[in-house]
Length: 103
Image 1: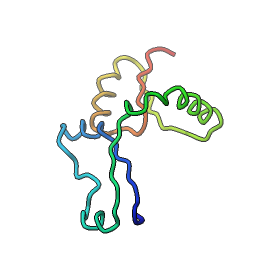
Image 2: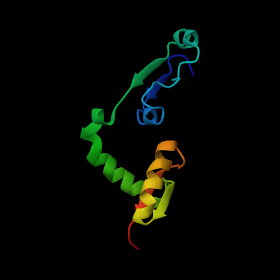
Image 3: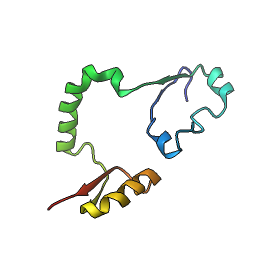
């Protein structure tokens, strides 16, 4: 990090995989953070609900023009749902997990 760097902290969903207990977090050597006067600030999506319409427009444009790509795992059939949920909890997938019910 540069002097006076800023770090945005998010990711509360990752705690679910850890059984609700805190993870190691981003602070390796607090002395380095103090020395560089680093700012750590947490945020939640609810802090920015007023920006949701603009974000929706921008996201749709980025998806349409290929600026953003995403991973998804698609599993077929309702019978796949329990395994999909367990895999999701265990971190077996990257990106979105979809259980497709009909083709």
